[in-house]
Image 1 (cartoon, rainbow, N blue to C red):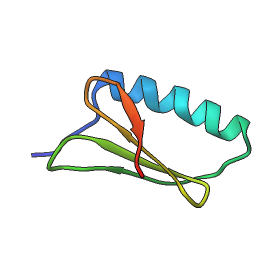
Image 2 (image 1 turned 45 degrees about the vertical axis):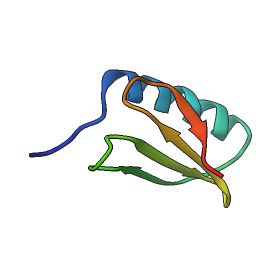
Image 3 (image 1 turned 180 degrees about the horizontal axis):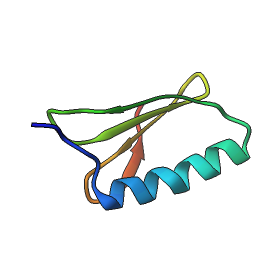
Image 4 (image 1 turned 90 degrees about the vertical axis):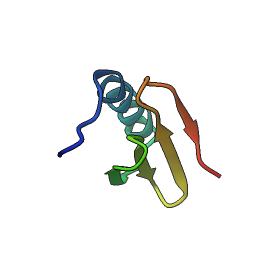
Length: 61
């Protein structure tokens, strides 16, 4: 079974990518964790963001 991002995750991903690229940070990696359904985004060298299925997000330390 293939897992796809939720509508909330896709919307939040677009908004975050807009903010990050506006700060000239490259989007290096995007990955959907098949175990949890969370989307991970690596921007620049050390900015890791996790987007939950409900669209809320947090920085990963």
